Structure formats: C-alpha cells, structure tokens
Length: 534
Figure 1 (cartoon, helix red, strand yellow):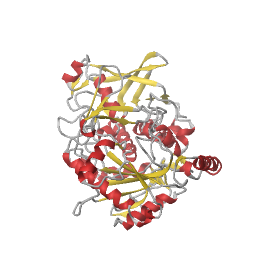
Figure 2: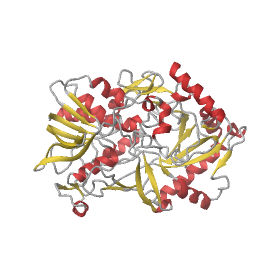
Figure 3: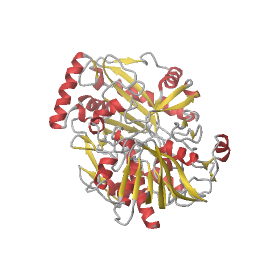
Figure 4: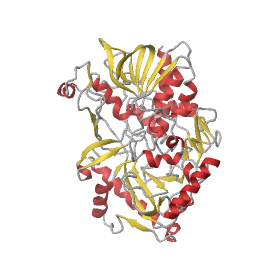
C-alpha cells in the first residue's frame, strides 16, 4: 500500500500527527497501531484506569531489568496498547511542566523548543473549560477551541479536599492552576475529560479525522521494521492478521511508538549502537550510539494509610454497595467517583529553600495503591505519592533480538545517582508532614508498611523496598544540535533520510510534571515542521 506518510504508533503524538497531516486532502496518511480500537467502556469511564494500569487490558504491561538500587526488584512499566496509547489508560492529568524546563531544552541544543516556542502549540491543542485566562507577558496561558478538552474534576472527592487543606497546614501555598503563572503550591489537577468521560488523544484528534478518505488507521498491526533504500526510509513492514504487509512512504516515516518502543523499532531496523546491534544479529544501517540511551523517569514512593470511609475506594461490603450506586450515577449523570481520575489533587513543592523551581511533585489518590494496584487489601484508605521531578539517574532501552514482537529490554537504573535518593527522602518526610497535619488527624488513620519508619536509614530502606515508576519515561531518542544526538531539532533521525521520531523519547531532559500534555504538544509542533519541510 502506498502513502505519503506512515506513522508508527497510535498514541498521543501519533494521533495528533495523523489528524494534522491528513487535514491536507492531497496527502495520504497511514497510522499503524499494535493495539485495538479505543471503544471499550474501561477507556471511556475515567475510573477504568484502576483496572487497566494493573493488568494487560489495553496495556503492554512491560517489566524492567532487576534494579540494584531497589533491592534487585524488577519494576513494572504500563504503556497504553490501544488507539490513544497511554492517554487511553492514564490518570488524565493535564500538566505542561515548568517553563524553565523547555528553556533548558533550548540551552542544551534543542533550538526552537524553548518555552515561548512551545506555548503556542499547547494553546493550539487546548480547549480549557475555564476559558483563556490568566495572562502572562506574551498573552493568555490557556486557550479555548482546541481538540483537547481540559476540565476541572467533575465531582471532587471530599478527601482530595482534605489533602489540600492539610498541605496548606503543612506550610505549602495554595495553587488553583498548576499550568498558570506559577507551578508551585497545592490544589486540584485539571484533567483531560469531557462531560465526565476520558478525552484521550484518540477522541480529541483521531476520531474526527477517521472520517477522511485520505487517512488509513490500521489497528492490531505490529510494526516489524523500517524499510530503507540505502539511507532513505521508504516504508514500514507490518504484521496484520497473521500476514506480513509493506506500507510504502513516499515522503517520510514517522515513528511515534513511545520512549520504549521508538528506540526499539530504530534498533530492530538497524539504527542504534553498532556493537549492540551486531551482538543481536541486526544489520547496521546507521551507527547511532545514543539510541535507547538517556532514559529518564519519575521514581515514585507511596505512603498508604487506612481510613474506614467509603468515600475512599476499597474492598468491603459497604464499599461494593457504594461503588454500585456510583456506577449507576455515572451512567445517568456522568458524575461521581466513576468520573474521578483517582489522583484528583496534588502539589509541587521546593524541598529546600533557595531552589529556583519545585523539585518534588505529590499525587493524592483516593484509594490504597500498592504495587501499581496489583496488590489488594481489605478495607479503605488513601495514597500519597511523591517523586523527584528532575532525576539525575539515566537508564537504557535495548533489544533482545531483531524481532519487535519481543518486549524491549528496559533498565531505568533508578537511584544510580546518589542525589536522587536524597530527594526521595525529602519527599517522604514532606508526605509524612502533610498526613500528620490536623486536617487528617480526625480520621484515626493507620499507616500501611511504614508506621515504624522514622530515621533516615529506615526511610532509605523503605524507598528501596517499595519505590517504582509513576509512568513518565522519556529521552531515549534525544534531540539536540550536537552530532551525538539521535535527532536534530526538527526531529529528523541523524545519519538517514525521510525518518523522524515524534513522541516523548525526543525530550533531552524530563520535564517537571506529567508527560501527556507535552506528548500532544510535541505532535502539534512536529506536524508544522513536517508540513514546512514538504
């Protein structure tokens, strides 16, 4: 089959690319997605995140290599496997990060990716139900009219409000807009929802575009390798319905498979560290040593407390009856706990005085999350997560062989930089301070796992025993102006032609916050770069 552009990956960036490029009726676009269509109720209902993240439902459910700094444990890495990608299984938090994060990208050689360069693309994407305010020096910080609906949590949980009150009692300032003038403070997250339903990148961008005759969306289709004539990418070999097919790309191949599978596809196609490829029996198209390097992720520690209230999710007879009522409420009103993203409120905090920007993020969750929701406990409770926003540790993605159907070899190397542990310990102490504040004292909470943990040595041991990702891997196809970068600032793969990568793997450094809104921004900006080149 012949197209102008073949996009590999129907996740957040891929959905944006498919929709924007197909706006030109003269352009033929194919979008290849390994997962299924996104028409299931678990995707539509926001509470479905609690079912999909712990399971293989719409989820690649990857594992990591054993992590020496986490007592040799293998970590868990959920990634969306359906149209919409991880935006179809995530907690829907709309977060851009601090403006200095993007200015840092520009200073590292990602020219054209500073804050003032990327803000117009965030605004192009956004339809904020609050409207276009507030203003900054160059204009509004929010927008209306874009495909991506951004809303307030529809039915705030009473305990999410208690968290904000406790954070203020612990000395943290209030913030009602983490994407406003300042990120620092405690408050409620805005979410990518519309009328109480998940508003993924697929619903925002792809569904309207799928009516166009020049866009082909191929689901349950595995990309096997990128095809080359010399150094020029000419198409993609895929497996669909048990048969191998070739999709030819007259203009460009666009890889949007995410921070794990984009470098995996490059390596399986002969682009990557030459010695590694030879060891895996892969012919070399281009020796690119940094492919799969520079992996960064937010390591997360959770303090759980038991509280006997059915306002919090949990396993009990009363909780089951309450949840059944809430399901019926959501079906009739699209409100209540089924419309919750679970992580309704949170905070950005400077853990030490004198820091230029917040270095810790907190997520307050209205249930006891243990082992990514895979370990269950009777009763009800809450979780307070903390992560270091700009970790120094760097990991890798590698391949076990030339077959894309084998999982990538993921090694985040969590806590390999000593300063990351110091930040994690400060986060633990901050969480304790908030949970011990008067707002929570009335509930007679009991702490799971960490009740006796007090000293720095005990805190460090607890972190090594239970910390894991909060699902923000980036950086494995770094863009930059230096010759060692995998991509140039136009997202073109160095050393070959007609091939770009467009997703969070392009980030030089991890932004301070959740990564879905940046993934959509990257897709928007890339679409302009591609159209300009054409």
